[in-house]
Image (cartoon, rainbow, N blue to C red; front, top):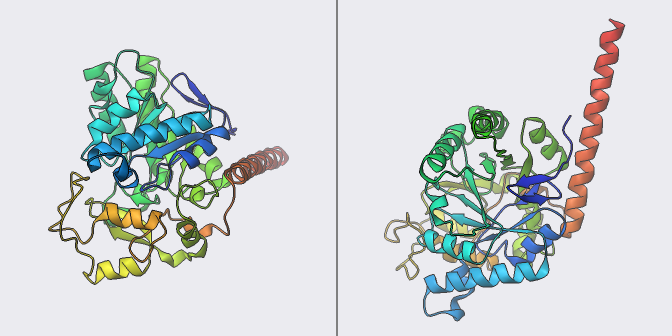
Length: 375
């Protein structure tokens, strides 16, 4: 029976095994990240779109991204002594520069996904304290990363996040795999834990596996930790908090959402994604949102002549509350939010219901043992 223990990330220790997922554009900045860190979890700043949010601080988008990341890390560290991470998508054109900046600014952790970050350890500098965490969607990806990192850099991941098909935002699955039980998070977690255990045993190093995607309640946490995860990553539930950095209209779109409002879209990044349906996405389907130019060149896989809309502008508009010009990425359970809470209320509820699930499992086991004895 698993307990809610600390989460180890190298020599760092989070008091509770909860990582707040990185959400761009602007949804998880220093406000949300520091609030989660203050509750004992791992707070995460998203790099995506910082150049738009900080566009008045530099001469161009790329420089503004760097200025923005420096400022967000600085502000977060001023608000908390807890663990602050940075989420950096491989799909970003300036991925290398953002990784270098995060390390230079002494971010506690880098979470890298939307692709396989096979050369991430090469950015480590002398005296680097930043932990490196890949986000994967299969045991095979976890194995490839561990092998490459160890062979080329004599480094193993400090933790691995396994993101299943129920996540919000970009999904590392083909469209037909999203609803296939063979690719469910329940199946992925034991597979990745088994694969990673080989490297743990061989090199005598703990590599915690964290479950992500569609996790919303303490009961969800307990279920995946019983399957071998050492913790969970939760994103959508932290959107509907006072400390979330998005506009209140963005948060309210979650509160107002119904289950059938959560849909799969095809993102300009070239991956399927999960989002809340709205008028903007209706316009996308009608071909009314095609960009005329690309002033940012922010994504490696985006060609403005072919994509249905500029994703960075759409997500920025949503962050600012202009949902008629943008949309909200959201996990499969995002519609469950009844109102806006504080981060503390969310964390307390997760802990309470985790313990409730733990006690129920103990009672179930006791009843089974008693029944077996009577037989």
